[in-house]
Image 1: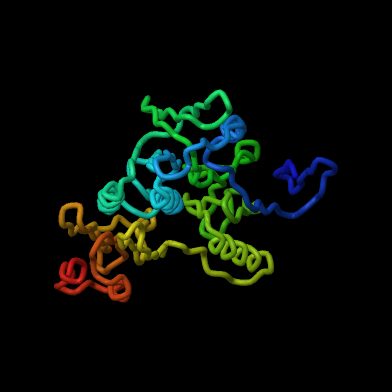
Image 2: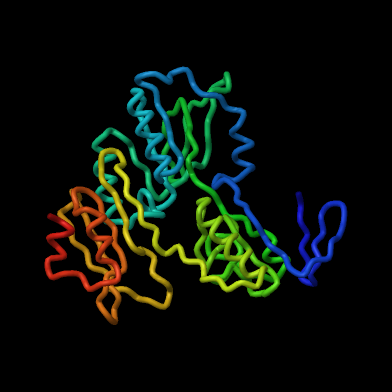
Length: 310
C-alpha cells in the first residue's frame, strides 16, 4: 500500500483520506542491491559448471555471505566474496578482528575483495552467467552469483514530512522511537533509533512494545539494544562480542587492544570516568566470552590480558 502521511494528523491511502491523532511508521527495507539492478540481473541463469571447478561470486561479506561462500567451497567451487566495506563483517567486527577472520578465510581458499562492489554482470549468449566486473575494474569469471548483501532501511517519506533521516537511511527517532514530531513514531527496520538501524526481528518487537505502552499511557523504559552480544564459530574461527561495542554518543570509551599478529585479537571498551568494562570484541583463540561478560559494569582485574589471551 502507498501511504501519503500528512503532518496535520491525516494520512492518505490510494483510495481515501483518514483522520488520526498520530502516525506510526512500521517496517520496511529494500535489498541493499538497487531494485533496478536486480531486475536487470534476474534474466541471467546459472552457468553449467556448478560442480567442482566451477566459480561462484558471493556479494556480501557478512555472516550469511561468508557461510554461503564456505558452502560453495565445500562443493568444490572457487568462491569469491565481494564486500563494499573495507573489511569482512563490518556490522559486528572492527578491522583488527576482521583481519583474523580474513586470514583464516583466505587460508580456506576464498578470494576476498573488500572495499568494492559489483558494477556489472556479464552473460553468455545463452543467458547464463559468465563473469562479473567489480567497481575497481577487476573482472571475475563466474558461473553463479549469490546476493547476501543485506538491507537498506526505507525512509523516503522523511523529506516530504520534514523529518530527519539516519545516516544509513530510515527515520531518525529517539530512544522512545519518536521522530522530531511527537505525533509520529517509527518502529522496525525503517527506524534509526538514535541514529542506528536494527535489521533483526527482536529489536522490532521491542520497539513496538515500547510505542504500544506509550500510546496506552503507561510508563516505559527507553529502547536499549546497545548490548549486541554474539558468539559464533565462523569458518572455524571463534568470533564474539560482549557488552556494548557501540557506546552512546555521549560516552567516549577508552579502547584497549591485545593481539598476537593475525592469529588472535581482543579489544575492550572502558568507561573513561570509572574504568568499568563496557564490552569487547574477540577473534581467534581468546578467553571465554561468558567469563568476560560477567565483568561488564565492573573494573576489570589486573590480569585482564591473561583473561583475554590465555
